[in-house]
Each structure stands twice: as C-alpha cells, then as structure tokens.
Length: 507
Image 1 (cartoon, rainbow, N blue to C red):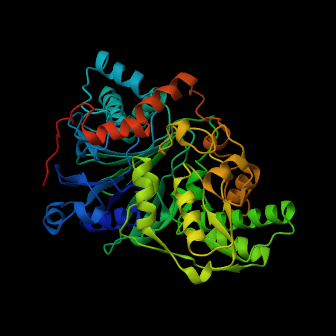
Image 2 (cartoon, rainbow, N blue to C red; image 1 turned 60 degrees about the horizontal axis):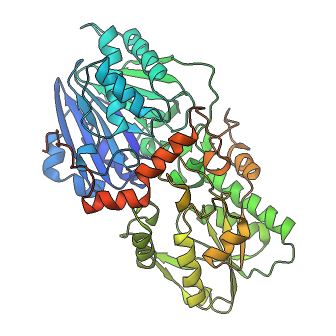
Image 3 (cartoon, rainbow, N blue to C red; image 1 turned 120 degrees about the vertical axis):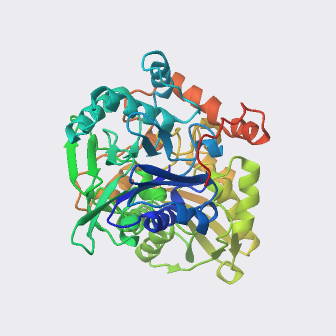
C-alpha cells in the first residue's frame, strides 16, 4: 500500500504535491519522494521518513517546475532501504520517472526477461523498478522523437500484457507529460481531478484518493478505469484509452475497511458511507445472534473504526463513548516489522479513560483483526481500566489468507484467524465474546447505496480467492519466506544483502 499523486499545472507544483502527500501519509509512512520537471530538467528529492521529515525548505525551493509526481511508501516487495524510495528513474527513452502503488505478482519472471531479452538492469529488489523498466522498454519500441498519445497507449498495451498483479502508477515523461494507469482488475485506486487556472487553462491531477484532489483545490472528475491509461501532456491536453477489456472490476475491499481515509470517494463509493453501513450490518448481526446482549457502551479503537462504531451503537440503542486517547506521534502498529515492536507501541499510542470502562460491559469495535496483537493489548487495557466484561467486534470478517496485492500480510502463521475458529481467536485475544462481520454483509455494505458499477471486490484475505488468477500455493510459500516478520528482522539487523547503491540526486 502506497500513495501516489501527480500534477500538471500552469505554475509550480511542488507545494501542491507536498500537500497531497501529507494527506496521503496514512498510505505509507516509511519513505516519501517528489520529482518535478522544469523544462527538460528533473529535480528529485526522496528519502526514508515521513513527508514532514523528508522535505525541508531548501528541498522545496529546488523542486521547480509545473509538472511532477510524488509518492509515500509502505514497503512490501523489496526492502525499506532509502534506495527503494520512489519515484524511480530511467534515462531512456526521454527520461521517465515512476511512482507505483501495489504489488506485481510475476516480478521475478518479468525481471529475468528484462535482463535477458530487453538488456535492462534492475538495481533493487523493488517490483516498482521492474514496472518502470517494462514501461520504458515498451515505449522505446514504439516511440519517435514526436511522442504521440497513440504510441503511449500502444506501449501500455504491451505493459498490461507483460505484468500481472495490482498496480496503480504514474509515469512522468520528461518534458512531455504524465501517464497514469491502473491494473486490469482495478485492485488499487487512482482518481483524476481538474481545475481551471487563472489564465483559463485546465490543470489536471491524479492521486490514489480523492481527498488529495480536494486539498489541492481540484474537483474530482472520475476514476481511472481498470486497464485504462491516461496521458496528460505538458500543455494540459488529456487523452485516455481503454487498453485492456474483459476483466472484472474488483477493487480491494480493504481500501474501504481500513486503508483509505473516510473523506475519500473511490470508484464512486464513499468510504465514509461504506463504513457507516458496515456498522449497521454489525448491529443487525448482534441483534440477530445475541438478542439478549448486556452491552453497556460501545467504544471504538481509534481512528478507522469510529464511523462503524457510531452506527453500531445507534443500531443497538447503546451509548457510544470515546474510551481511548491516541498519541498521534507514535507510528501505526500495523506496519511495524515484528510482534515485539507492535506490543510495545500499542501501550505508547493509546491511553484508556477509566471513567468509560469502570464496572461496565464494554463492546470494543475495530476495523479488522489481522495479527491480533493490537486487540489483545487493548482488551487488557480495558480490563485494567475496570471493565467488567470486554466484548470485541470487527467491521471485517476474519483475515485468514495472505495478501499479495500491496498490503503487508505475507505470512499465514502471523494471521491470528488462519486455521482457527472464531472462538479460538476470542480466547487468544482475551475477549469475553467476539463478533466478526459476515463477508456478504461487508460486500453489500460497501457498494449498496453508492453510485457505482462495482459489484465485486478482491476479498482474497477473507476467502482465499485471488482475482488475478495467477496465484499458486508455491508463490504464497515464497512470499511468506521472503516477507515474514523473521525475514524483516534480519533486514533490520543488517543480516540481509547490502543496501543497493543509492542512485538519486539527494538534494
């Protein structure tokens, strides 16, 4: 999961890109980068860290130009090295920079072909560098000095034919424009916005979420369609072509459960309204399966579960209260590399308000249960604060399978619900009762009531059905071995391969 943004405007785009990455920070907190184009010169700044830490005044002053792309990184494939911060760059043809959200699922095969057939060198373990080089090669095969939209779309047809998996990407072609494209299943999001400049010309922006458009003063135009490529020229002309047909539009349902901001609209679906409906469905399930419940108060685990929790409380006719205060200067436990660090961080980032727990039967609500570490700690915090009984509700079904499309869930043994019953999960996390959302209810809650054509979602983490159709048991075993917590700990300890040479102008 990463966040991407790209702008072509009539004035410098550096501040707008910075603002966009700031509101997309929840999509990646490990690294950030911006590349701008000033005529035929590229200006790049990227490094590990949060947006506010990576970019200083001197960096922003150097990021000149009316065209640029930005990226916030959440490492899944590859490593967390600053050498793998994005955007990536290749000099031929024209000079292309790329920012990518998602995971390719045939990276190894494509990387080998790039070396053996296309004579292109890959310097990192990042699948994003692979995607960039595929696009560069396909464009070089078709382009001339007079770069036409059709040459770009023909190149994109070659890209779609070669790479599989989840990818929403922005490619900046030096002095020419920005190309945005999305995988044929539309797993990862990409939205287009526009606004009118002071001189009357139209400016365009592409981003992972509509909230980035709003912050920068752009009006949401539409979503980039699955298998579609859009090309915005440096002088503000927009071209688009559907390069792949026949695939089902199946966005990742986890975007609506957890990943996206509630004030975003993606694929015509309001994230906020989807989460409201998730709470309604949970309330219906409790009333159906536990009509004589003794819940005194509903308390969300901040922040992403608040919307669902409020609707759940309203549906049950039970008080809603804020029982935890969040320290916002502590990183999310979800993305930390090991269980020990996660346990340590939970106590650092949340503090219980004893008044809301003492002597009460409390229903805690979270967006999902993945590894179980966070909810186990929070349940104990509720008991320490004086709760009589602690019940737990998840707005999502049990996460039983690995994610291969850009979310850090690579290892079955790290998923608490894998090969366990709901009661076994409840016992492990210490809940007096556990309620999971039903999958059908989650799907219906996400799209029903929305102006969208989406009717199916990638729900692979819940049902083990991988929509790209290329995921084998061998592949799942390989990524588990490469990306589990133990492997990440070795990388952190320096036991893995040395960091690739950092080839970027560190301004």
